[in-house]
Length: 136
Image (cartoon, rainbow, N blue to C red; front, top):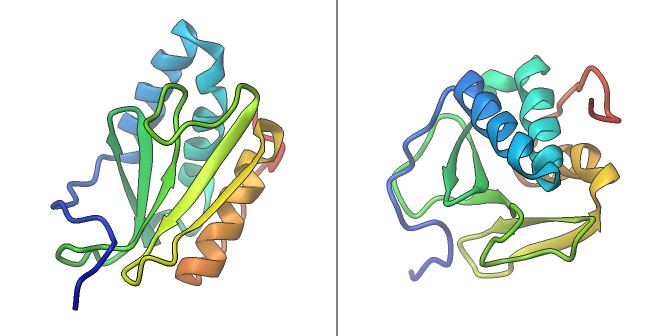
């Protein structure tokens, strides 16, 4: 069966590295702030060990654990300047699925954290309990 999911080996990065990476990006461009908020909410969540993440260019890619061999269903949070862009002031989160019936939702950046956790619940069955859903 042909899959439309992520076809590459998924090499996770520690949450602390991802937080540091996006904080550096946000100091250069405030538009990266919602990625900082999402990664911090995952890092603070009791579900953090059930998720793994890496980056593709600047996009955040998240999978459920244990990580399977490719192809892998992933959540992609598009970063500013992404090949799958969102208009300024918006965030795009996508679920890249095996069957190609990908979901793509665009919302204002203030909704980035709750939107991420909605995807994590709907696609992976993982509930997050972010400390502060409003972000920073």
